[in-house]
Image (cartoon, rainbow, N blue to C red; front, side, top):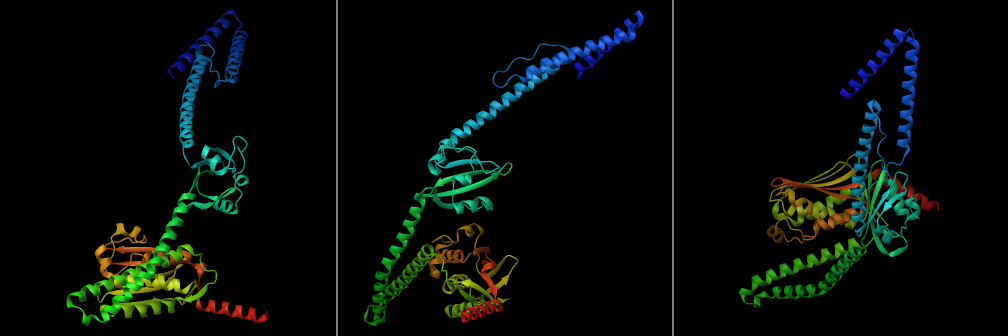
Length: 450
């Protein structure tokens, strides 16, 4: 600001001096006109120099600003400083980008940047290996022209990127890839692709191993259990010191049999595709049947089991699987609820789903255990699980059954106060009883017409 004040003062002095000189010689207007022309020509000359300097390629060959003084000198110097700062910032950003590209080039997973027009902006070497991209031929090519797969097309444009997409690699059916996409900037996308073929193979081997081992264990356990029961039936001929060991051996053989049974069921749920032929299951009748069976199993605990079915809803699915899922939850509630406790089974609709909820006032579960409850063999408390005779697979089975019915398991619990397990089904899977009857009648009429 001070320089500008000095420049203004200097110009005022020049104009005042010229005006005084013109007045003294009687040519005031001519003197001012000549000064204005000189001032204008000088400014045009400086603008010409300024334009030539700006038009030169400052990025490739930076040049010093033209020599000048006064206001133009300050303008040249100011712009030159801004250019230096911009070059410094550009060099810093370019260095960061180069480092990011170099580091991503060393990754085994593919990293692809896609612009707002769905065209490829940049990718690393792993993308060339996994997806077959070629540089520079594929630069600015549409991603959907390079990955021609309906599953990828739907995933890309639905923009539901909470879960990854797993599919076969383009042009290689023996390779399995996992795609993850994140939005950023002006609707641009960062896509990360990794090869999970080995992980898929290991998961399949694990499932096959569990299924085979469980199947092979079934026969010897059955034989052992049969002989133990025969011995116990004739235990009067044994020394009394063997009575208790024999009872414990039978209990443990029964427990092993339950574990093998649950492992086989879990393996079946994982490997078999969901059934296409769905049954219409009346939830109220299902819940009543489970209540009756649970009461008979735990008569000694004298539980109060309340049933609250607000609507007679019908779920489309497989009855024996849904019976197993809901029964697991009710039996668990009965196991971990003290005698004379209360268990409530409710079914109700919300705006987005249909709920089957099982709640109790039992011992509850600490918060840090809840995320892991559906893991196989996870124990909240080893001693209480052993006492209850549980296999540690019940909630894993429930989770898989619900997934096969497009549903989710939600768990809420307060330690010492009780728990609630909710099976949340999408409304597309559920209808009212009268609607189901009407659909059955319509199907019957259609069949008769044919």
